[in-house]
Length: 110
Image (tube, rainbow, N blue to C red; front, top):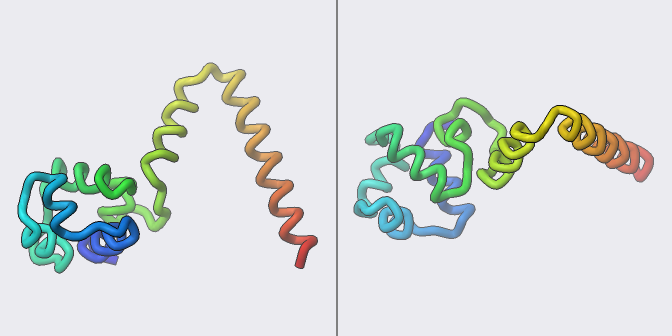
């Protein structure tokens, strides 16, 4: 999927108009329209502002990944990386256990 299609999808998922996004970026709605139609590509600074305004990762927006991770999740991962190793190990153990239990419940509920 192109940058423009991803931008359009993210904007619509947030229920925002081109005008809403344009106001956030201090530009005009037709510029956002050109991005969405892939007629024009934003600078890296503008793409970063778009990703923040739409609460999606820049990697997803520019097509480097197909996994759409919101910025709140990315912020949590960064916080996790800043914790001491022993606390990270405990949190990962809990996360792994929770995922395993969830998958087991799904497997047996079918």
